[in-house]
View 1 (cartoon, helix red, strand yellow):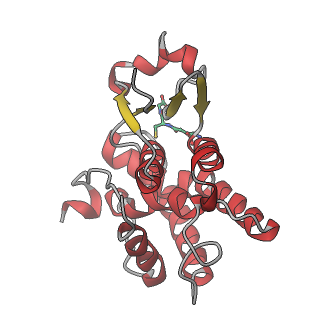
View 2: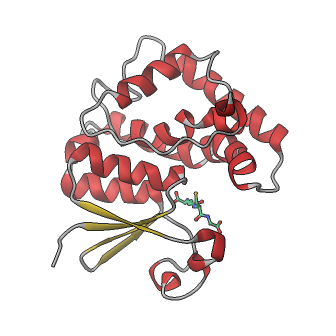
Length: 207
Ligand SMILES: N[C@@H](CCC(=O)N[C@@H](CS)C(=O)NCC(=O)O)C(=O)O
């Protein structure tokens, strides 16, 4: 029997991509199982037994089930790649701050903007654009003179930052004004094992 971790995902979900990206960057043995969100597979059994919230991603690591993309990053790092979470307490706190940023500002900014253009979600595009601009303006200043979000090497904070930032143009959010943000994306893309999420040619990515 394979000992690969199962990642239940949707191939165009940034929340799922951050999990797959981390597994790929750290050489964790994994397989992906696509969940048919369009037909509501995630709102029915057997998926609801894995995640009663009816959301992807979910991982199965032998008998252990973990839900929520950032919780999964913490689990995988603690278990298989502890160097991706700093042991120094101030830096660990910063990692948590950026995981919260990914679940907050990045989810209601570039992720929401892309849900509108890629999946036709009925969300407020103007608000998503405004939240994205605030978020990226903050990151641009924060990253001045830094190579990584926390400390001197990549952490799970950078992985959580990556997917919805890289794909922001699909939601009509330009990354042109943010060279430090784009430099961090490029650094992550240059890491051994990097895997991309497919680009959807909508929004600014259609050009
Ligand atoms: N906080 C969750 C959010 C996950 C999430 O929003 N997943 C979306 C795909 S990107 C989903 O499953 N949507 C299905 C639905 O809302 O019905 C996480 O980080 O994993």
